Amino acid sequence: MQVHNFSAGPCILPQEVLQGAAQAVQSFGDSGLSLIEMSHRSKEFVAVMEEARALAKSLLNLPDRYEVLFLQGGASLGFLTAAYNFLPADGKASYVDTGTWANKAIKEAKRLGAINVVGSSKASNYDRIPDCAAEAGDAYLHITTNNTIFGTQYAALPKGDTPLVADMSSDIFSREFDAEDYALIYAGAQKNMGPAGTVFYAVDAERLGQTGRDIPAYLDLATHIDKDSMFNTPPVFSVYTTLLMLRWMRDNGGIAGMQARAQARSEAMYAEIDRNPLFVGHAEAGSRSQMNATFRLVEGADAAAFDKLWADAGISGIKGHRSVGGYRASMYNALPLESVQVLVQTMQHFEKHHG
Ligand SMILES: *Cc1c(COP(=O)(O)O)cnc(C)c1O
Image 1: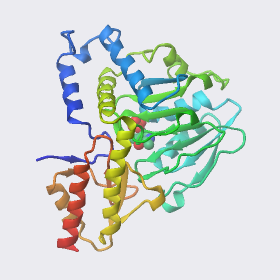
Image 2: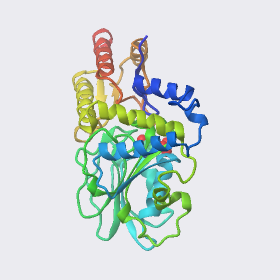
Image 3: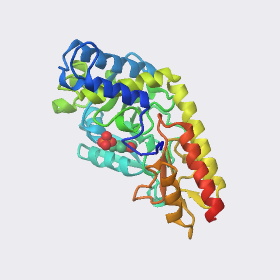
Image 4: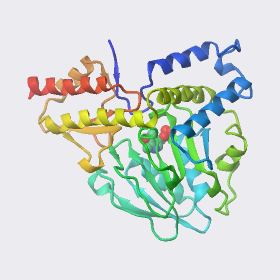
């Protein structure tokens, strides 16, 4: 049976990407070796890293001065890396509290200095993106562009004089944005651009080196720029599979293509949540995520019956996160519209037979 994979992360990848990755583990190019048993200094792997960095940069339309890196430690180490590289030893930055991941970013940054939380939607269990702006004198404003757990996303990204630092783990490569506004973007690969094991950074190199801090070598983005993202052994399998995903995105209309797909999927999903009397959405309409739709059954509806229906339809991974409950349909780049249609039909079937 075909599986419809709505997993929140690690998540669905296109079949051709999985096949290419499997093939490379068997034998990579003409080398006679597996991708995961060859030197990362080989010309074959150096070419992989160079292409992945260049392709990500061109897909996102990053200006020349931006550097792309593929490192380790996940977005969770990115929280600390961001603060080390951009929070001046005697300065301050503002953060927006939009949920679990934003809170972790705040906690890590507070180890290094003065952090203002300039907006929070905690009181309503993070069902919206709060209105907020940076304060005068901030080194940066930190945002989490898409809140994977609560299913909220900035409909319009903040604009202003203060540079942005953004955790884009769960919506990178799904919509166009103005890269010039960002000092740093970071994203764990496993939500929208590849397998777990690597974290993507795009950094405005001209803004580095201004914090007056002594930065540990691995956390210093300048170290990695200097070594072409090969300061230490890179996660070769993750970087290669991410490259295959980047090529797939390029060949399927680039970011504009991904954006059109995300719009089509999320419109179909939210139309059903709004129409079907047995379901209610979690996020406010103006803050809804195109990547993760959070919803639950109305009081008294037969959850066991619904759970059986979607499992029987081959749907996987829609149980909600424990902090929200209900359901979460994660609709990342590789998810076909058809999978959303199957979920919508399942909700309609449930209404008809169990309403
Ligand atoms: C999953 C996720 C993270 C954590 O990523 P890791 O790579 O597991 O450290 C951080 N931020 C957001 C928005 C996420 O969705």
